[in-house]
Each structure stands twice: as structure tokens, then as C-alpha cells.
Amino acid sequence: MLVAQFAEWMSANTKSNIQISRVSCLDPAAAGALATCQFTATVDPHGPTTTYFHDFKCTAELDLAGSVTNVECPDSIAWILSEHITQ
Image 1 (cartoon, one colour):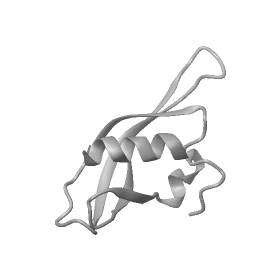
Image 2: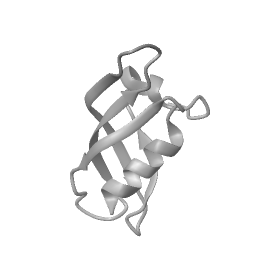
Image 3: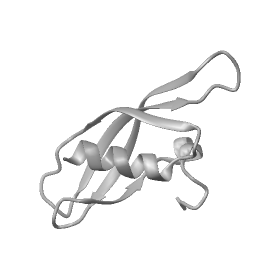
Image 4: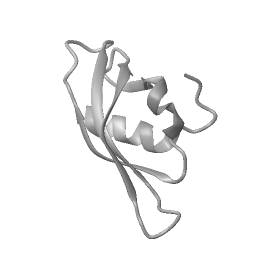
């Protein structure tokens, strides 16, 4: 469930030319906690070559029900996020 929710949140909040795949997450100790997730970001090509960024990591914030409410990514990969997301 966490992997699917994280992937859905990221897909909804990344730039339109970025696809999120190969998501894995460490299980949080409890609901209402933080979970680290790792994923591959694929950038649509502007030419003949697709660019893949492997092993990006972000932290998912979970509510008491265990649902993803927010995701925080390091500044070094914040460029993949939609402009309406603040880091």
C-alpha cells in the first residue's frame, strides 16, 4: 500500500515530463511516522535518448491511518517536482 501511495503522490506532484517507477519503501515503525522511499525517475527525451535517474530517495510523511500526506525530497532532486510544490 505504501509503495502505491508514494508512487501516486510523486506522479501527481512531479513535472509532466517525469515518470516515476521502480518504487521501494522501508516500512515505517508506526502509522503517523516517516518512511524512506527510493525510486527511478525517467525524463522524457527531447531527442533520441531517454534519461534515467536511479536510486533517488525521498521521505514520505504518513498520517495515523498510514496514508501518504506529503513527500519531502532533498534539494538536489527538487527539480523533478512540480513548480507548485515548495521544498
